Length: 165
Image (cartoon, rainbow, N blue to C red; front, side, top):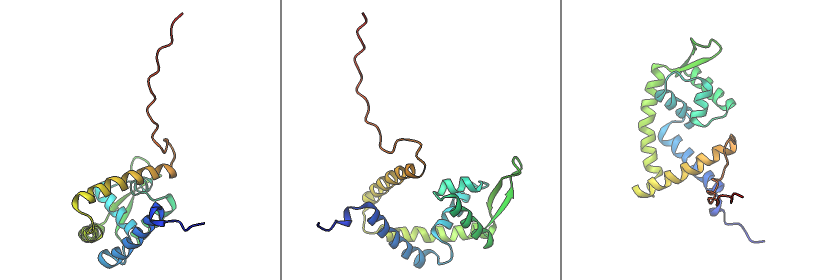
């Protein structure tokens, strides 16, 4: 059997991209705040006062991972949990002043990192890359939460009406 060309395997390429991203993140953005932690900070800048479950959905993290990320950010003093006044069982998340400052600082660094990461592509190629990777990523969400068909159904050809007797 011949060797498989791994450059045609999306999982292999995604892993290589993730490795490059991890290296760039640690050297250009932060060794203390991880990319998923930044995603949570970013979600709470965009929508302050979300609950933990909703933040996890927004950033694509499962329940156990989002719980750990929020716990770490809380221990660092970057976010606070506030009891929901409408539902005492829920806690809403808000960034502290340190959390807002950290987000601002890291947002600038992530922009520079993204420029380096995407430097091999022209502006048009970058737009196409994002459009395609978003489409694949959105479809992959269906693997985690299958509520809709994973592959779009081809439209059905209209059928001729049945002859009435």
